[in-house]
Amino acid sequence: SLKLFTFGNCNIFIHFKYIKKYPKMNSIKNVQAEKDMEITVFPPEQLPSCWHNKTRINALFAPFRQKTVNPEDWESKLKFWSNLIKKWCEIKGCANFTMLELKKVFVENKRSPACLETVIQEMLKSAEIRSATSFYEPPQVTWSGWAVNTFVKKPLQWSFDTIKSTMLSPPIEEDTIYIVLEMAKKNGNDLLKKLKSFKSGVFDKGLLSLQTVQECSKELNLSEEGTIIALHQLYLQNKIAIKTIQDKINSNSKHDTIIKLPDANNSCAALTQVDISIYTLQQNEKYLMDSINDLEERKELLRLEAKKYLETNKHNMAKNCLKRKRQFDTAIAKRVQTLDNIQGLLVRIQESQQDSKVLDGYQSGLAALKETMKEFKLNSDFVQDTMANLQDTLEECDDIQSELSNLKIDNTDIGELEDELEQILNKTDNEETKHTEKLKTPVLYPELPQNHDSMLTDMLSKLPKIPEKLSPKRQEIEHKIME
Image 1 (tube, rainbow, N blue to C red):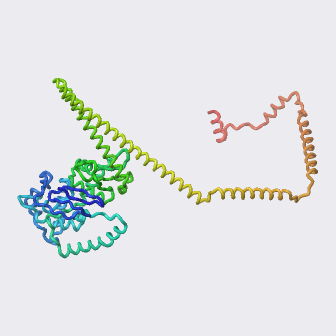
Image 2 (cartoon, rainbow, N blue to C red; image 1 turned 60 degrees about the vertical axis):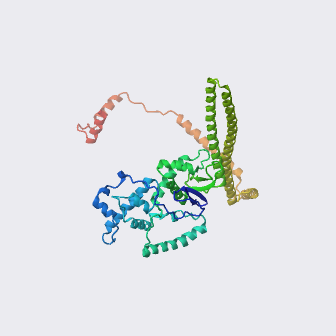
């Protein structure tokens, strides 16, 4: 049997043995589990080490005492059971549990823990878990709905729940289903990371069927119900979009659920009619390819069967096999033609999407250009007026310069100045000529007497003698010269 879950405007059916009808509803109702529901045994090797300590396990299985007696022991015991519940959800691959389920799983010496009700109440107060009823409530997609839900309904509901839990402390029903939020988020993130590898390389739309998601989740050790919880958690976080459509391909199912993954920017838009059309074409393509492969295999079996009949001289049976084989050839040819049409249509859609992106780029550029021209007042009339004004201004400047150049403050005759400059130049040339002739005249030195050598010797002898001991500065200079 199945249980109908509603994700916004779509319905998903989930297996539950204890449900026999599938009414359409806005959110999942509180499910009453049967006593004979299947329970997986907690693996003994993953039990905590204190499980085999009789004294410790007796204390853990006993009811909670007053917190004021020993607060540390009380907190330690609560943490032990909450972590063990989360571990159990991880083992079974589903982030939900009931108290009846826990009592059947956590059994030691044929007895169940007597403190589970307090543990569940405390986990509800700390928002570690939520009831399935509140968890599967559809998110508010409109601003008004979000505002009413955030500022009116939730505060009232929180106040009511707080007063109820504080004053009344209602008992926990054994068959009420609770969702471990931490596990739901972890499973959702792991599943999303795994599903991103299934994104289509053609459109990069990330459109997957629920069946594909469930097959992928098996690699993460998630059950079918655990997969639904993980998907709903992603849906609540706006990380995926989900929609249920009528399944016209698979005769075994009346509905087909589409999951849309986020884009490269980790944002996920709602599923549009274009997405649904592309998904339908891709599913038809997959169906045709599987059908063609199946027909090819059946055709090959008929060929081998006809060959076997020929070996035993059963020609009529061989002809019958060949006749059926030709029928398969005709069916394959029709399906191949249909497949070519679908693939061609997908290629056209891809090209149109790329063309739309190019057109969007052109429109953005055009809008930016118009905005720039508007901001700087760039238009043909404005440019023409500006150029005309510039030409008039330049002509006016020329007239001003012309008028300024006609003004004569000094009445000196320019011709007289030029004659005077020429006389100065001629006088300078004459002086330079006389100086040159004077330099060319030879210099006459007096003749030396015939006994000039003896005279020079006498003069040198009269000079003072060079001291034998030189000054330090002189010695330093001679030392450098010798080096």
